[in-house]
Length: 510
Ligand code: UN1
Image 1 (cartoon, protein in one colour):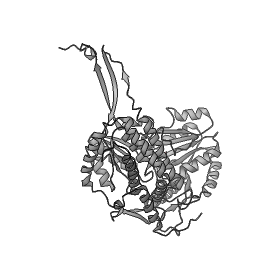
Image 2: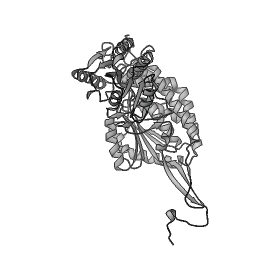
Image 3: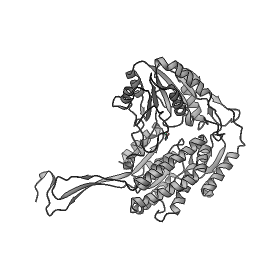
Image 4: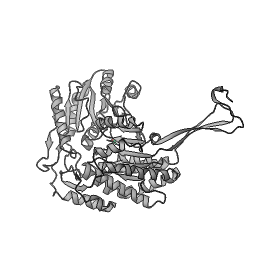
């Protein structure tokens, strides 16, 4: 269970070597502006210069100039750049995945999984580059034709969080670039190294491609003021922001004030109903992965289970046994399944939530700090399950940590009500072998989330579907399906090929 302590400069050296191999300009790493720490042991990986928020104007002007050229490159040819990006990512998979583990603390298979998600969205976007379809519409006027065109939008700002430092960027960027836009990326200040690495990888693809203008993609490293300057900039028609609901509530009115467009992918409070007929062997595995994977730090992490009363005790016992077997430790150790929390503040919010839940009558199993002696500057926690008498206020909040609240139900309607009785609406699932329950869960009276699954946990969505959710999750959709439309402007065109000028609605004039 206990991993070996590492020498504090070992991770910095490892990160530096990876970034060198990935082609990150070492001059970008020589400064003492922003200190980047690894959550593995709290040591400093690198110090970086930050972008001054006053410089954002120039960055936007450059990105806009790039857009003016890029929008004229035919979409299938733009897709060729993304095909090359996918090739570069395949070559970089091990290194970039490991850098994700170093910077965000994800276990190696999840770090690599994130890069796989990037490769997948590149493949999707290449196909999409030949499928930015519009409709042809029957005109009411003789000798007329109507159609809908989808056209490039402009400069897109991508604001991303620490927990998916690279995949979320790729969902946005692969699609935005294929759609003919330029991109400015403000990564989390907790994960700028992986952002510089992605930029270097994209640059390599651009160097192999004749039509990519300078300024097509820019990374701006810094704190909230930098993000704010982008959010408020009139030259940025689209802001795609992923992070907390608190962040989204700050961003949305600023973008709306200038009548810009935003795609918001915010907090989740994802639940699973475990019904009487559920296959408990599958449910236990799905719950363990969804609640504890990424140390509970996915926006799709499972936070609540609503269990039929008659199986709740046995499920709880089985979950406790599964939780006790989960190896906690350095994410670089291939045996580890639970890595560290991102920082001390994350650990403290877990502690506070557990205290509140226990005051609300919950029985806490697990929780508390582990490996403090091995890693005094890092924050490893034992995942917790809390048996709750009801869905109290703390259960209705998203705590970004491995806490799973268990509530019981007798009638299916009660379960649905509890399921939807939170402010967030990202992801959800039901475990049942009863087709009526499964279909009701997916129906209008069922889950109110953007993602609703049957016999699958709420996390680990594939890129082919549109990703995002309702209510305080922000309503945005990223990645697959027709989410690309959010990155383009729609024009309705009417073409008169007759020798007359009939007016619509039979209006007579001149
Ligand atoms: C996030 O946590 O912001 O569905 C994204 C999942 C991942 C994406 C999570 N594919 O868990």
